[in-house]
Image 1 (tube, rainbow, N blue to C red):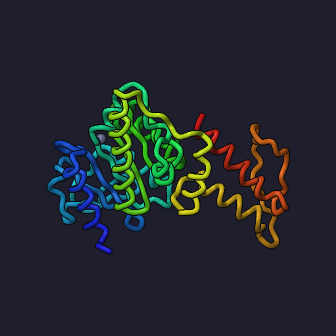
Image 2: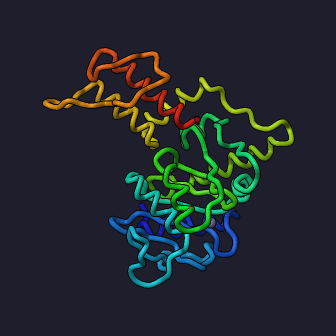
Image 3: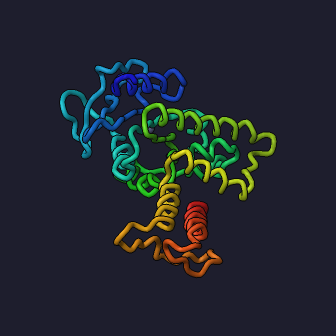
Length: 272
Ligand SMILES: [Zn+2]
């Protein structure tokens, strides 16, 4: 495995090589203990080497030399809400950015099975938000639900366990956007049938590809099946208005039903 700074610098240069940034656009950060390695502001991603990277803390303060980019808040809010995330990548890939700046979002509902497994049940498009605190606040509620987001009239941002995974997710978003735009003149995208989504999300959870909903399902399964000795496990106490199952006791024979109730409620909430 290459050192983290070398990986981050390589991803930054890839953003330029892929044509996803121009001028000083785009930024990459990676978690390094309690701090973060980040690309410097006002530098073409084409020119980034591992020695050019800067170091910031969780408040966005620079430690050592260099200046941080203005969009650091978008990165920090992801790390704050997703302890499992090790890298965040933001760029302006032309197709994804075209969708971010046009009416509608043809890639919101999944239309390829692989995308559901890699990215989850939807790719939301946030309304335009002013850079700084408004943009950060708009992104915050989505961090735990998905792994990539279109930023309205701006671009795309994706995150993952490491630089490679975060980059691949952004690449997939751009690829889906390209396909959706190619499909527009021939009738547009037809999303996958609703019934196809749950088994694909189960495959995603089995592969430990992480969204909070998947982890919640896994936790519910664990708690329902194996209550911790000497403690009472409270699995869920929220109403499940769509469930046909009235009540399910933790650790009981109906634990599989509890898992499906939790999954269904979370997925409905995500879709609505
Ligand atoms: Zn940007």
